[in-house]
Length: 204
Length: 204
Image (cartoon, rainbow over all chains, first blue to last red; front, top):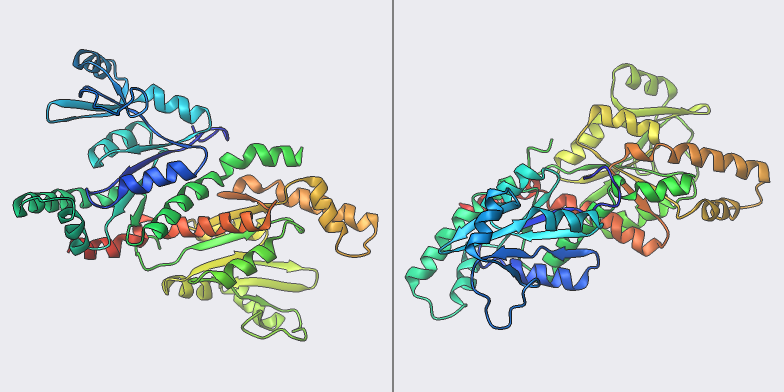
């Protein structure tokens, strides 16, 4: 993939719930040209306001199982009674078009993708502190202390995999974290293999 | 070097004459905290306005030769009758202090440094086009067509080594090139090994 300057780069982004991943990624995608969020396949029912092919590719459980059997997923997971997965072909087509692609997945999905596409880069977003994470998780609504405690345990479990990632972004100040995220993408675009076509033309 | 989060990163920056390397690097150093230009050793005489230890470490040819014999240089070169070199100890001390260090050297020096410190990252700056490079080289003064032609040949020879570098920066628009250069440094600072201390504290 990296031998052709025209190819985009695959970025995996993971974070514990409450780290601010979705806000950061949505703002990045909205502002930066040439980068897109991968659209997952799912078996869960379409919700009001969701658009097929934009928010998800909605498929039947039977079709999803068929895709698993044929090895068509870069990664997939079952969450309660629903399946979620990332189509290998869809991602590779966007990369081949020179587009950078972002996958928002957890550490288990990240492991599956790295095994298939070792050229990908992975970014782990962390909150600035445990107390700030607790504050953010509590601020979401009227959840019981028990629910918040479970979310904190889930967050700790997710964070314990941070060392498997290439980059760690601390989301203390949103604008600063966004700037750093943008820098990771921008820096990758200056890689020699992505600039080679230009320089060859300059020399020729 | 990369196993300790506190260490800085060594960046090699090369460019053909006229690409704007020195202006970019000086502006970067002036604006960005935590990054420094390495101070070279040289045997050439101190010029008016130059400060020992700031612009160069001025040493005798005898002392320089002694340093070569003892293997104290990361890289060194002879330019006409003068020697220039980068002290291995000086660079490693700054990196150990958590400071990023920039070496402004040519492709031959870059090869020497990579052989000793494979963890370094190298950036090659190119002008946007051959005609723009010719314009910049001509604009410098009343040089003869012959001198400019030689400079263009030198530039072509330098550029032909671009593929040995990790990054290529096209210096078309100065502000854009500076922003991209800053992004390469900033992205490296988000590497997991440099953030590990923070995350371990977060988990602990």
